[in-house]
Image (cartoon, rainbow, N blue to C red; front, side, top):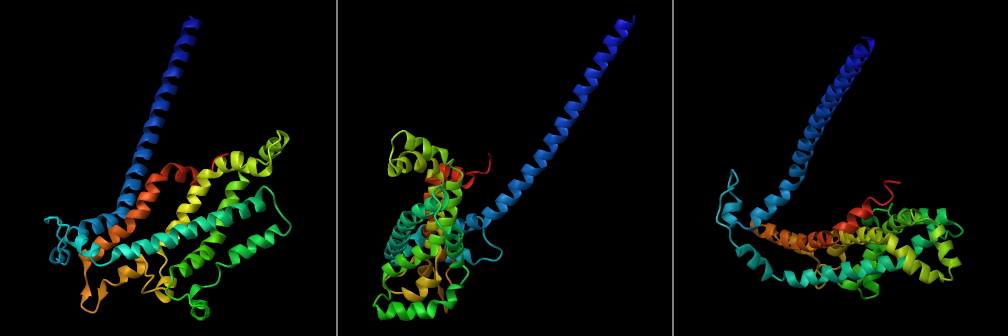
Length: 296
């Protein structure tokens, strides 16, 4: 009789535990569902301005100025044809050249520097790191006058190579700090093992270290591309005519007669497209790079 009672009590306890587990899972599912809905709402809120810009780019100027805004309209490519015929190709090439060359220079200079300051630290590493970051503490508006004088004296005003040099100097400290954090996640024992196997330092870095930190390199490169592509202050003050870049070109749609909303939206869509495509193609390495070292 006692055996039966014990068995019944055990079954009751098991059933109670199962019910409690299901209730806990249900509460967790409800909580996760609520947070998922909140995340979607926040994400759509951030994405809505971009969506509205794309929709406005396919409107006529008269439809872009309606109050309340018109959601139903006849799409047109007139604004894109107008932007393409207004000389955006030259400014796109200037921005692409300055951004691409400066990003390559940043990686060529920043990756070895970050390696030396992480896996192979040198004397005065902390001083070097502080010097890197201290260059970002000075507001650019405080140096524009001496920069303008220097650039004018050497005959580099309105020259795209001026932007290449400035963008390289602007992004190099950020790249150094970012790449150092990625290199610090690589065990130093890998270099020792490669050295014991007879590999030279250059071969060990090329075949062992760089493949491991390639997501970090991709993330750093994309950050540099975004900063260079969007830079406005140096471009408008030093290279605003012959070497005009995309941000300066967009300002041209703000006239004394008002804003051309549809045409400006079309130009903004064309401007954002290269960076969006770059992020899309590099998304796998970018996600791995941005989360590098987050989980040990």
